[in-house]
Length: 380
Ligand SMILES: Cc1cc2nc3c(=O)[nH]c(=O)nc-3n(C[C@H](O)[C@H](O)[C@H](O)COP(=O)(O)OP(=O)(O)OC[C@H]3O[C@@H](n4cnc5c(N)ncnc54)[C@H](O)[C@@H]3O)c2cc1C
Image: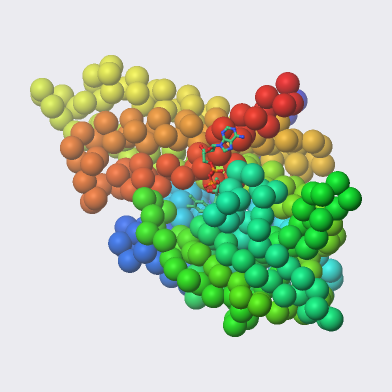
């Protein structure tokens, strides 16, 4: 066993932290207030090679690994959770689905711009009657001569409303198999297709700089070659990349939890009550110690899952444990961070109030805690 951090991984952490704390963190409050992420942040992350760490250079990546990619994600989330979400969509989900299942032409055309930060993307699975039950899709795609025609409505789709979004990867029902089960396929829909319309952007509890939209497909015609991967295995493809998405979510949770610890430690040493810093009271310093313990454990678990992925070994259990533990740890850590800050922690001007709201969606995204517990219990 070797817990040594490689020089490359150390360098990634250092470089991403420097950029994230200098460029992203100072804008986080403004992005939240404006409910908008400046496109140039994505462009800069692309130019610095942050988005494509785990992808080959020929597609705009940097030829690194998933451990490095997740260290990068942690550091970005430490500065702002919404910004780190860009890597979830462009790299872990859509990026990987294009890389693993796309044709050479699709990779050149759609993957490279994502990894180099020239474009962003949406990953459209969820519908009003299809959330945890991902196989219950109702959106349809029918082949008419040499075009697929998509009809249906998707909800809660992240980042497709970004001004630089280029494509949406969309899951749709294309038929029924011999057992009467829906056949689900995956399609690449360019954002400028007139048949795909953003009907609304949701107001959200947190992650306000990461837009989430409803998408309506009305006789949305795309060329036959925009089918992504195996026509009969669209859902399986989604589920494969969602497994990486769980490691990604865990790394994002660790980054945000670390930001809570950073802020809380600083505050506890500065804030004086009853004649001494509140850090001197065990009730406060033990909260900080508990935060540090749970962050350390969550970090080790996401790194282990990413390492297994890099080795090409099964990691369903490890990725699920990482996501479940990190997201539930995050709720406790953000709550304790608000508590340590007292009344100040509840005010908008204090970053931990934003962290508290941002954190809540992490137990829902990429599989709810309940669904992850089902996955874990099945593997026992
Ligand atoms: C901020 C945000 C961004 C999102 N971005 C995207 C996106 O980009 N693309 C996309 O496709 N989706 C996206 N989603 C949707 C997200 O993936 C779903 O919300 C999630 O999968 C849960 O589905 P649901 O909301 O329909 O809840 P449901 O599936 O209706 O679940 C409701 C509750 O029932 C529980 N439950 C359901 N089934 C079971 C069961 N068998 N056993 C026990 N409990 C169960 C759930 O755990 C949950 O507590 C986003 C969601 C959020 C909040």
